[in-house]
Image (cartoon, rainbow, N blue to C red; front, side, top):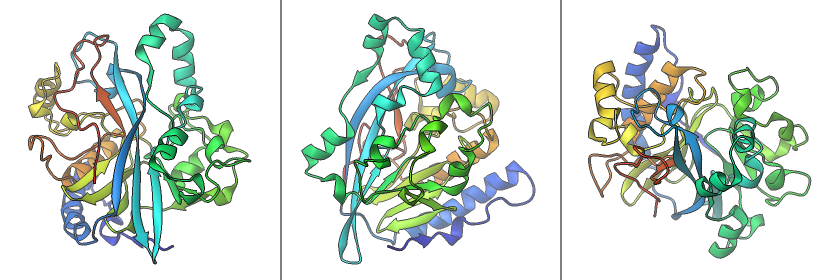
Length: 338
């Protein structure tokens, strides 16, 4: 097992402030985009829905939305990615969220406690579980090599890699600085993490990385700080071109808001001279998140279904619901298939 460091994306924290770093993000993104296309493609990618749940509109469509609904809906999905390395198959699960334990994240636990059961049942829809999806795909838990999340908000990994691990051979790919931050959270971070659940997890179950790496043919992890300090994005090269996935934004149209029909997005971005709309439940470093989204935007190819939008696949994708007027997306991907 050996990953290839992406030198092109190293040392992007240049002097001159966030504007200079934005310029560098565009330049380096274009360069890596050309490099990455030559690495090949994975053997296969499938998408499986996990859960649809409510999320504050003011966070998901940061400052831009004019929807009257205080909440919108997002759908968490898992990607299963396979490739061959040194003659053997590798399997990566991207965003294999244990939503049963994730509900104890402080913010969502508080929200659940303040929401009548009858309303919560209408707003939360479980589509499937990680074990159930893998069983139907014919993947044994011991065959999974890697687990990866764009960041560790809401994640409780005890069932996956704890004392009796469901995935006995898997390691969690995580940015070293996010893992370190769990030991002493800032107040802005505390509503979104479950740090106590990490205390007894074996250190060897984690695979900390520093920065951006190519994992295998057409599969890369790109560091995209901002939403959290250790944010990372999945980048995959497929039969339709390059896709990028993270939770930096919650809809493909947040990268090209000039084409959005969501109330407020196009006009707000024109007025404020911003080209993207952030997902900003935590504003750890907002300018860095903006720059990271521009890097993602630079890497992603245009959608073959509608070229106004990019092949950016939100790990939590905006999902229309009658309960949330004004938040139905103009365009949705729903899945990546390769």
